[in-house]
Image (cartoon, rainbow, N blue to C red; front, side, top):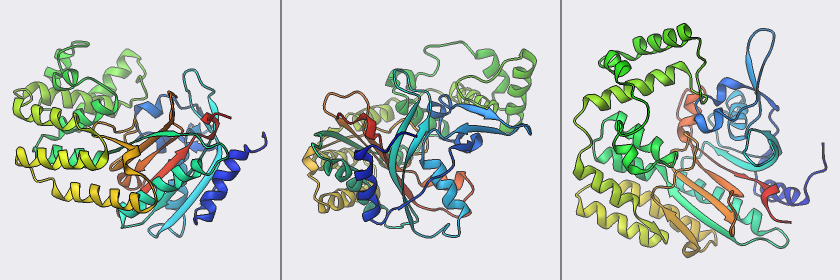
Length: 363
């Protein structure tokens, strides 16, 4: 194994001084624990299997392995803070498939906004403490804030999923709001599935794939393919997306810039369209105050409503930081409260973390 990058040593020391115990989960991980993280990650896994037929993968990132280790430990359900540094393996177009990643994860804190601010500040100051520290462009978002809007608009679940997923994939709004506007015509399958329950739909899709001898593509399981068809069938059976609600969403998604100014614009828009988003906006403002209290300048951050990151498990505050003119982030992270329940936690456990790609920093 190559010697540790001095910049990484500084980052890890920074995290340990802040109380984040270093952890090193196994490189070989059960592949199934990554299946709920979204197609973006699953399609990039390096997979293998053992003689029993169990599927494994090389560790593609640290968040889920660290989380799994925490869930298996005696500390599960209690507050815990971990740091890490080591190799991860996943397909990256134009980049090495093996690279080194540092980061931190924080579990069990009910003061979510304070934990968000701590993780965010620790990640940024870890880079700022480097010799010849780079200037970073930092953008933040809030998946929970946008989810509150969709809930306040009383949208059906299939529309909420479609909008959130489409935005995370960078799709234009026209393709999101017009499901049948482009792509392959699946009207025959949709007609068969319309009104079908989820269990029967999954069985039908699995049978069709088996008969055709086709393996699921893009990292999707047969169950997910069935869910997509059911969603499209439900959307097809509806009367289209309401024009006035689309207008509200488009205005909401158009807000970006200085976080404090964006907060004022969001409150003004919510008042104009008579939607109560006060709880979500109060949490947003509280987080900004706590971030400022950690010595960060809010005016140097850029808030974008439509910024969600490209992993399905984020549920709240999200952020990325780039070196000036760089295409790939050097820092990325956010809140993922729902992931622990998905991996077997018996009760909800708050969670937030950040990853740092030290090798992407210019020497």
